[in-house]
Image: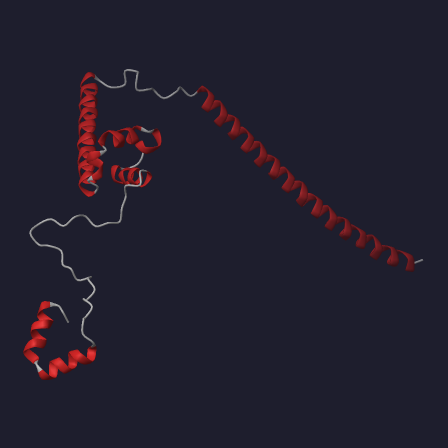
Amino acid sequence: MDNQPETVAPETTAEPTVQSESELKLAELEKKNIELQAQKEHWREKYERDIISLQTKEPAPSEDQDVYSDEGKLLKGEIKQLKDTLHSIESKEARREAESEFPVLKERKSDFDAFLEDEENKRLSIKKAARLFLAEQNLLSPEPPERKGLEKPTSGGQAPPEPKMSPEEITTLMKTDYRKYEKLLRSGKI
């Protein structure tokens, strides 16, 4: 009989360790679940708090409302006027530069003004709009501008005149009568 309790005792001790390991895992999972539920609740409350604060928040004052003092309104008006003046001066200068670079624009001023009034072209700079206008009108040419000043263009691209004498006659003339050869050469007959 003494043998039975010894064999029973190790079996009962083995079961509680297996149960305790599974209970520990179950306890860990329950603890993680509780933590996750707490986080979920925290973020839900924060979300609700943010939504409620956005719904009850007063809208930002618009420019029509009396936000500025009388002096502030005067200064704001002056600043707007100065910005408009500066913008017009800059656009005139850009127009002048574009007209100096592309003289054809002066001749077609009314067409170019109508081109600039188009909604798509208002966003372009004057210089880019001028190039686009000239390209659409087939006025953008790669030709260099006319030369100004006293200097006349050279005539380097001409073909030499055809000689009336054969090359053998020219060499004979050069060897026998150099003065006549030189005279014919200067006159362009050779």
